[in-house]
Image (cartoon, rainbow, N blue to C red):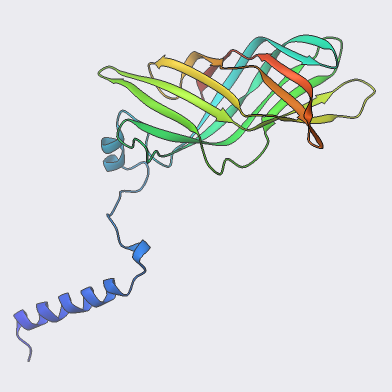
Length: 214
């Protein structure tokens, strides 16, 4: 009969062999699942990694130009972001991967314009950064790939692609997701036909929105 000491030694050896047989990527620190008390304690006051955060968006009196006409419109819709590790500054910030974005507005005189996410956010550039821990305050910079679909009475819908991402920023947020806080568009956004990228067909001149978590 094996002694208790020998049994413990054999068990430890079996565990070591099993661990060495795993791929290198499987060996690493054990992390608590998203939403657990450990994750929340470690990330606070940043949101927990893996959380998907939906927010409503409202951009009153935005200026959109198309076909030689300037339209003052009210965009309504929302955005959803997934919280991910920011390897450039994991202690004071997180990346926000856009997993959904869509806002729409009625055009004066009939028709509509819809802005929506145009591609998968493979390499997220949006960042939520701690500006202060006590009390918590945040700065957010969003970078969103967008398209614009313009529908006018009696015409076929026209789908245009942003020549660069839509860039929105907010400073001094008291919480994330925001609660009615303003997000400002950093620069005018031009749109072009996908088959004629050098010819600008529309412009989003202003898009100063307010956002609130759902």
